[in-house]
Length: 118
Image (tube, rainbow, N blue to C red; front, side, top):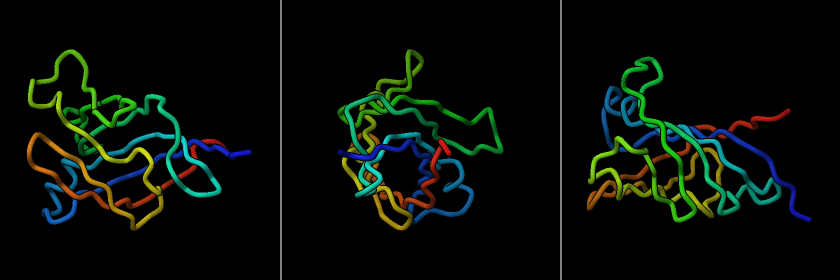
């Protein structure tokens, strides 16, 4: 039987300056298989993009089963195609995942993965 845990993963974009990295940081709460560290399930996952020190800059989203980042009713047409390729990824610090904003993919490094339930 698969052991499941809820975790919070913090992702930082690679190849950008410190200020831009903070503005593009992704925090997401997901389920993982604790034996393999791989994210599991087609269930929606919830997160936010932005700098937590600047609440006005935060963009909450729901990660859909297909990896699409749904920012809700106020999203622009361009944002409706954002994809985070984290489904099925190994969620351990140091691993990398891609986030696609339209045509431009960006590589994110997983900084931390913290259990949400003790």
